[in-house]
Image (cartoon, rainbow over all chains, first blue to last red; front, top):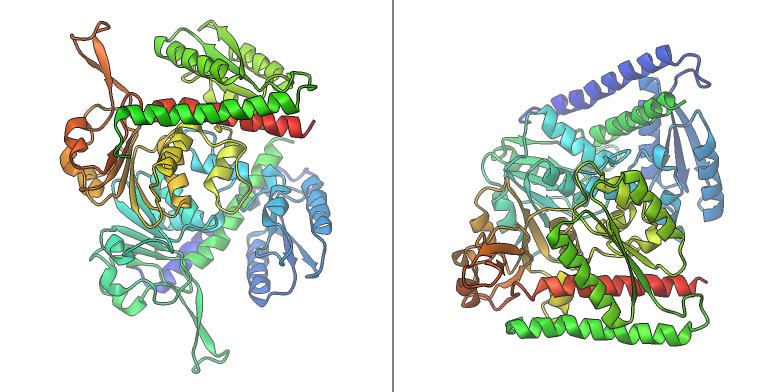
Length: 300
Length: 300
């Protein structure tokens, strides 16, 4: 993973090409299906957050490029939770929709859990349904229908760059349900010895110094000091932070959680921001959607 | 927790008394209910493992002592999985059964997951249903209907002895779905910085040396060396191992994972085996059963 940023973008592009090949195969094999073998992803956004709109646009464009049909739904910020759940139920019943993504965060007043648990288990391409998460957590049980996209992208990057976590010390910074916790569980299943740090952890730097693999999902620029890193460490930077930058037309630039320049000279591998985990997250959404479509076609 | 073994037995006894008080209140409040307000636990055992029979006897005796009705079912080892699931479905429908416990391990050839997921979510007093486990894993979501008994007992012991895990380093030895993993998750939710060690971990001793709290669920006598322990550490020993002992009538005695004599002089607190976590596990089963009964009565 000591590759330059362009190589990481290429990795996500490779995954997207693999998805496109699978989509083409489905369209050929299931041409007589009601939707012509075309995987379909419904993307629902509530409200007008600029960053959410950008994410949703990227996701839909990636779908189209891979041959996946994307169905967009934009609900006003003052929509009722009931109307959102009604929409989800309609999408649950549609045979041309194989995955349903509700872009988070939802407006204040809506209950994420109630909304996400309304998504049919088979269409939960984000993997946040409690039953899917339980299966992700437990080893030796049935695998979840889908693994959340960002954690799955982190593991996929390690795999594709030949980093085997087995027997390694992995330190995860952040314990969110969306990134830190599932990454920790997946690395534990891959036989890493995992430590999860968070806001109440004392002496984070001392823990990071022992790590062979560091995954940071804190959301604070420069949080991970270069001096904390053990020579040869593999660093996966999940943070995406906007910092002021007058030299940029839009007045800011995106950086990760890690002191990039300093880390570059110490780490054996480090993912860039932007261009590292972000594109893999979108690529994994496509993978989860095609997985769901394949399951659906096989059972029809 | 520097208490002598007898004190730990007293703690479990205290919990059982608290349960008995709650049971009496239910019987008084819901006397007109179809089962007279009596919580009921069905205990199912398949096959004739001596240790399983002992556990089941202890669990049923503890129920009776607390005023909980216990219904025992013994299926022969060569029973079909279908007949076991049929029994579970019958128990799911019974209004006088509020909790269903299927004693593990099941005979070879049966699929634990399929069997356990057949238990109605509301009656899953062991907390091993994937949906319950997903809720246990994720912070900020609805709590699970039940937390698995042994991990719950570990946390309850820490609570009752005033050990606050927040900001402490906790090292968990073992990553099983039954003990190690859920203990790790619960301690993380209590703001400990948690490291999970397992068979692929290198230099376990070095990690244990950094720990303020050690929970061992490995199942190997003497696995945790006294020299690994930091002075003042809190040790929770979940291991229950039979070692040969000619001085005992039955030819063996039970010990934990930890070098007991050596650990006693280093740790600020340590749970004994037998008499530490084991009785708390049974006490938590009673708590989970009464919780389930209360929910049931409130919804009738």
